[in-house]
Structure formats: C-alpha cells, structure tokens
Length: 276
Image: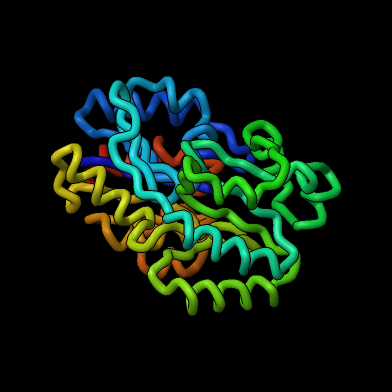
C-alpha cells in the first residue's frame, strides 16, 4: 500500500506546519511496509523542511503533478507549459486585477510591486497562508517579461483574483483559447493552470510508473478541488473532514480533520484492517 497525501488542509495543520505525531506515524507506516508520497499543489521550494529531510518519504509530486521528485535522484518527471501558451495566458490575465505566481524550477516567483502587506490584503489571499507566502516567494521585477526568456520553464500559474467575475471571465477565455490546459483551484479566489494532461492524478500515474507501483494500491488523501483528479486516479480515496463537498462526494470515506493528525488516523484504520 502507498498513501498519497496532499499537504495544505490535509497533512499540514491550519498553521501550515507538520506535526511530530504525523512524522512519527509516517515512520511507523514505512517500517510496516507502507510508503507515503506527497502530492501537492505547492512548488518544491515550499515543501516543509521536515518532509524534505524525512528519509521515509522517497517521492514528492509537486506543482499539481507537473513534476515528480525522487530522493537521491532529483526531478525524475517534469512537464512545463510551452512559452507561447504561457505568454498568451499572461496576456489574458493582464486584463484582470490579479496576483500572479509563476512556478518555475520548483520556485514560486511573484511581482515585487504587489508582494507587500497591502497587496496581499488587496488580492484577498487567505491569512492562514500568508506566513508561508512571506517565507517562500521570490519577488522579481517585470514578472511577465520573465516568461518570454528562452531559458524560462514554467510548471504552473497560481493566480489570485480580486474580483470573482474577472476570475470567471479569465477562466472562460483561457479555456476557449487554450482548451488543452488544465485548470483547477484549491482556494476560494484562485486558479491553478498547468500544461495539458497535467494534474495530481497524472502526477500520481507518473510516480506509479517510475516506482513500479500498481495505482490500485494507492490510498489518496486530500481536501480541495485540485485533489479531485488524485482521487479519481487512486485505488481508494479518503477526504479529511474539512474537505470541500465536491471531494467528499467522490471519496470512499471521510476521516479526521487536518488538525487531528491525519497520518495517525490512517495508521489506526490500517491497524483495524479498515484499509488493507
């Protein structure tokens, strides 16, 4: 068995930290022959250090499936958005009031003019996530101009909208002009845009192929809409109690909340033979 877990709202508490209890459970599960794989919308740079250093986690699926990292080998799977498509998406986003993040080489880049307390508040970014943003974002000038550079590689757009009507209009235009692109969301006012055929589910498939794992042996755990593809690909799925209703509806069951040590909960279910 393999457990594929989301981070924010799932493995991480509301304070975006990973508990010692969860880390200890990951170790015990590993020693019992059950591996844990991270499947997150975050960039690699945003993965908590405790998880990066945890020798009981060998694989990390990040940027919503655009990349897979293997301990000791580095990035073993990567699919970027091509430059012309990325530039076209930038032109559409430039018509709205947005806070854009560009995920590149495992790093989140943001506009230095907007990356301040006033800007983060103006674009209505979830206060619980602000400490992580302040820690991990790299502020640059002329954000969009970077995309046109021949050497630039874009894993994903993460876009926060001030106005929800503009969000809907941009999503419609992007889907119309670039129907192959994958679009999902994990927060109330954002869009996450990946290359065609890229999502957490395809990232899980790539991992399984690389690791020689039967995908039917994977138990997926998550909380947000960007976990839907993960749940549909895995053999079994469990939503945390704080998950969105869309995810709960397609899950095989609901477990504890993200603040109640999800890995410990899974360990108990396995011990009771509820998950075999």
